[in-house]
Structures are given as C-alpha cells and as structure tokens.
Length: 201
Length: 201
DNA sequence: TTGTCATCTGTCATGAACTGACATAATCTA
DNA sequence: TAGATTATGTCAGTTCATGACAGATGACAA
Image (cartoon, rainbow over all chains, first blue to last red; front, side, top):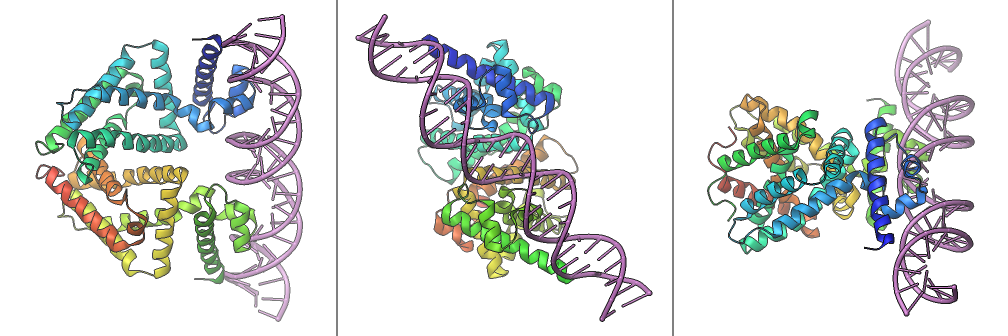
C-alpha cells in the first residue's frame, strides 16, 4: 500500500473520529462541516471528497459493519437454513468486533450513541438497513431456491430481530458488546419459540 | 370553521398537491421550495410555516394515513389478539381510503410514487414508521398486559408485514388500491402459516 | 360599522449544506 | 529528475432553513 493510499485511509478515519466526537459533545445538528474539517486540518471542500454528506460520516461505521456482516454471511456453510445462517453471521460479526482493534470498537460504539441520539441519523440507518436487506434477500433466496414473498418475509424478520435486539438499550448496554450479545441471543431464542419449525426453509 | 381556518387548510392541501406534482414531474431533488411556493402563489417563507422541511410536505400524506391507522387500531374490540387487531386496523384504513374522496386517494398514491422514487424520502418514511411503531407498541403492550421483548417483536413483525406487503410492487400495483389489498392479504396469510398459534398473546 | 386584537403573510438578512471550476501541491512512475 | 496522476485548497454560487420585523387580513366586541 503506497503512501498516498495510507494517507487517504488515515484522513478518512480522522474525519470520522473528529465528527463523532463533535457530534457527541455538542450534538449532530449544531456541529458544522467547518468544525469537523478544522479539527482534522483539511478544507471543508475536502470533507466532501471523502463523504457525500454530513450524514454519511456519522453512518460510516454502520456501513462498514454491514459489509462485514455480508461477508460473514457468504462464508456460512450451504447446509444451514437461511435464518440460521443469518443468525450465525451476526454472531460472527459481533465476535470480529469484540476481538478486533479497541479503536474500531470504540468508534463503532460512539457511532451507535450518535445514531440513538439523532432522529435524522436514525432514519439514515434505517435506509442503510433497507438497502442492505436487498443484498441479504439475494442470499436468502439463493438458499431457499426461490425469490418469493416468503423469502422476503424471512429477510424482513431477520432485520426486525436485529432491530429489536439493539433497540431500547440503556447507554450502558450500548457501550458493552457482551451486553449486546446477550440481548441478541434472547431475541434469537424468542424467534425460535414463535416460529413454526422449518419456517425459513 | 372560520374563513381563516378554511383558507389555511386549503393552502396546506394546495402546497402538498403542487409539491407532489412537481416531484413526480421533475424529481424531488431538482424541485425547489421557490417553485412549490410559486405554484401556489405564496412566499417561500410561508411554505416553511406549513411544513418544517421539504421532506415533510412529501411525507404529509403518509403521516396522515398513519394517524388514520392509529385511530382505527384504538377502535378495535378488546377481545382481539394484538396482531389480529393490527391486521384489521390496516384493512379498515385501506377501506377508508378506497371509499373516501377521489382526490385523497390520488394524493396518497402520488405520494407513494414519490417515496418509492426518492431514497431520501424513503428514509424519511422509515423514520415515520419507527415513530409510529412506538405508538403501536403501546397498544400491543396494553393488550398483552406487558411491555417486554415479545411485545416489541409482535410490533416489529407487523411493521415488517406491512413493509413486505407494500414493497416490490409494480407502478400499476402501486396505483391500484385493490391490488394493494390483495398483496396485503397474501402477506397476512403467510404470517399465519409461519407463526406458532397464540404467538401474539 | 368600526376599532382593536390576534394571526397570517411577505420581505429581508443570515447561516449552513452542498457543488462545480480551476489552480496548486503532493505522490507516483518511468 | 521529468512528466503524468491524483489529492487538496480556494472561490463562487445554489438551495434549504430560520429569525426579525413590518404590513395585511380575518376575528370579534362595542
């Protein structure tokens, strides 16, 4: 990796970190692009060369996490039923985060706090999840052999499960990956109880 | 109702209609507040006295529809299980629209086309749905007697059902309420097949 | 009817989020 | 080191959104 590429990656991360810190400190709406750019010593125009919008920088960690999840999903064995594969892919993604760089973990949790605190960003995350749902649907349809209403419902149910699992957490729970994992498992268990056996086949 | 109040309601509807027509004609991003205001012969400043943002005018019909749904939900008999009450409230809302003023119907369908065509607005609709979900959750929790993970899941499942039912429609399906109803019933039937009896009690 | 009050509306000024154009500076490659 | 690429800064301009104030309009009582 050349110097140019390394510098770019560094600037990108610096912009995300500076933005998240400012968002947490003084709120998303009240911090300006100028402030974020100044904190990293680049021009405001350069900010927009890294991120298409102010919203995008706040959602960058979430977007990255979704890419990780998708990659985990594609690595699941063919024998697993769709929902089982989805659940394990989720567990794998959380594990990667837990065992990864502390800075990455901190960044992810900060981003979650910002999302929870800002309706605009929360909506953006929903849009992100919906976009991701299309990619998940492809995998579910592939495993089931048909792209029908049921495949869509299995996919939507997974999204709901994740959403419910992450939602309504206290700040403590939001800041602790183990707590998150526990909550997630409770929700997966609940789904198991509520669904007819073989519902996702 | 006094003249002032009538005038206000008229201006509001005129702004929505003008905005939706412009959005459909030339796209959401490219139409300006100035254009919308000019089409209704009011100042741009006045537009913002009726709607907090450009997004809000596009989502006004969706927001109104959600209020109707909530009202239908509260009218459902106590004996119905949560999901049954939700499904019937949805049927009731659609029926009200079907049998209501043709202009209201046209406005609702136009708004749906705009939402489908515009990612930003789509995200906004998600935010609306999430906000509404909180209100739905209250009713589900009330009927079940407890606000727990299961109540949240029942609520989220309903939201998913509606979303899947309305999603991936052709423009024709989007423009025809009977088609929408049919699709919705198919989805409700599917949920019935996939869930364990009494799952929402 | 008329005068007073509350409310709505238009005008103006301002700030912040973007975007295109172009020049400069940094990196890469031969 | 020279020349090609690519990143960055500067500048000008558009649009969204909001506060302040003045004028217009409907509401209401004497």
